[in-house]
Image 1 (cartoon, rainbow, N blue to C red):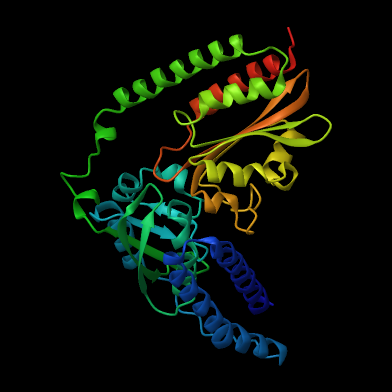
Image 2 (image 1 turned 120 degrees about the vertical axis):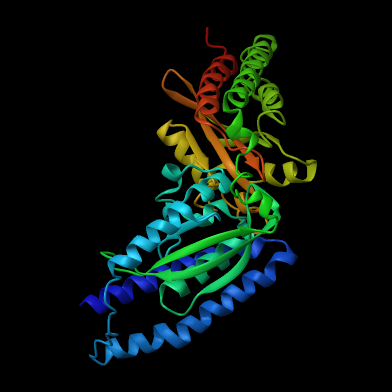
Length: 378
């Protein structure tokens, strides 16, 4: 029974990795060789591992491999020492690449606090083109197929290659093998080495926060002015005018959808006219995130969206979030008297800072004012 359950977990993990590879088909041509290598690797895994395993189970043999003894206390202490003292960014992940621990150098290098990263996939911090390959290699290491290394890119630093080394470890008390990931950037000065690890943000956090707060207050002021001067009760004009206030300075993409009798796309502002026209042709009802926000009337803040298909697909069948390289999004309902009048969706892409909780709260306030102006409610 234990072997059957383990096989089921392995098969489910394989299916999830295949889904990621399918989503990665929409990437640019220069990234496709990496995706193809990962796909071939997964096919080899099915032929060499999963199928023989299935045959053993079908024939009534447990196929149980002799389990190694748990790591001794010395190995456990060594692993703790690595996390405390190692000068390079180090992460401990499970076979699905979900973060178990980050060391101090890793939190400085990725810009993500250990408490936030724990329980989230490490692939969420990587560029879309590298996620499927990383997950495949991490799964292979966790299966005991040997240590691996590959070059990836962080989503916040897409121009800097990062060498990721993956090694299998078995901490005491853990039922499965864990993967130790060491990240070594091309420029070691960015790795957070002693004496060079303090980023400008770490040295002056108060100044940075104050600057962002001032910019947010300026945005609120401009939005208020725009809504007061917009034609009251003209839904499309109000949404279009408000979208222009948000576009560029606050978000790379602004999509406004109305949902009175039926869904309709009112405004799309994107980095280019071509991209805006392509998304304007999409049916809002085909966007799960828009439909869910309209139905639940609950705003959604996502950093490194886990579901690439959350905003539907473009005309070529590619996930919109992958094609636009979306690193964070805000989706807020436009409510009047408990009824959803529309949905406003904002994207930030590439290396731009993710939406913060303060920005999400400000956007929630602006969305209520936009709904009142759009419907002419006093």
